[in-house]
Structure formats: structure tokens, C-alpha cells
Image 1 (cartoon, rainbow, N blue to C red):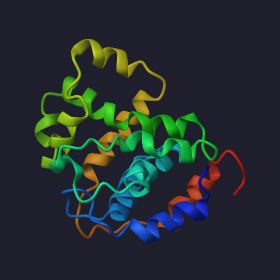
Image 2: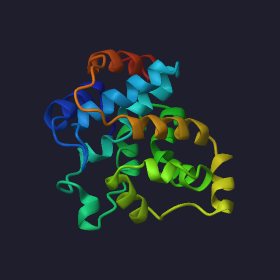
Image 3: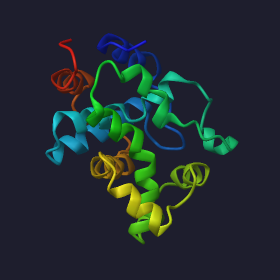
Image 4: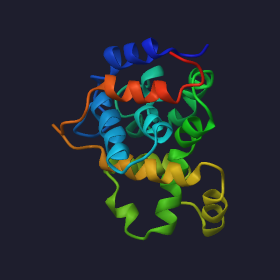
Length: 184
């Protein structure tokens, strides 16, 4: 069943106040900061929407606090896709789906990137398959949507600043409505 914009807003109301695994921000703060970074960089509506919703899978399924500490890969990058498929196109969905592999790619291609990751991102990286080989990295970056996913991933890693002011959820949902498959 596809989510509506009202459903997405309700998920953020109900679960957005939860701590973002091992970080000093909530799920909602992380989503808003990621989307704001994309907007500040001049990304289009689809990529900003993917940035806002990239971790929606965490809100749809409850694995408890910090699943990586329990040795669990919650495969959140895939969990939201069936619920968003009727609402958004592949530009939005692809960036969400590929943002975890983008971390694996960045670790393989940018030597300092791994060291910049938070402790939880390093734990989850190991659970998600680890750093790509050179061959896997080369195959990843030519996939449709991979470059957008890499941009999203960089914003994702930066979006963990306690108390950072961002536009409200309604602002980013308005942008999401502009790239929806159907008028909402």
C-alpha cells in the first residue's frame, strides 16, 4: 500500500522524535538537516525529497534503539520503497535505495571518508557488506541514480548537528508534492 503525504507527515509526528541511532539528533532533525543540505547545494525537488525520506524505513519498522549495536542491519534503504513506489518516480526511489551502497562506494574511493564516519555509521557499514572493492565501486557509480545517491550520502553524513535550525517539515513536503507522480 502506498503512503500518502498525510501518512508520511504522521510518521514523522509519531516517530520523528526518536533518537537517530547513536547520534545527537532525532530522526526528524536528521531528515530535515539532510534535506536542507541538499537544498542549500541547489539540488532539485526529487533529490531533496530523497534526502528527506532516505531513512523513512527506520520509522516504518521498529528494531529498537541503535540496531547496529545489536548486530542488526535493518536494511532500511529497502523498507520504505514499496510504500513510496506509488508516490514517487525512480529518481527519488533510486537515491533512497542506493544511499547505503553510496557509503560503501565513498569509503572505497575517498581514503579520508571512512575516518569521517560516526561510530554508528562504521558499525552499520560492516553489517551492510563493508567497503566496496575497486571493481564493485566502478560498477556502482555507473548505475542509474548512483551520482545522486552519493550526493545524498554526503549530506546524510553531515546531518547530525544538534540544535541546527532548518526549514520545517511542511517546507520539504511542499517540495515533495512538486515531484510526486500524482497531484497531492
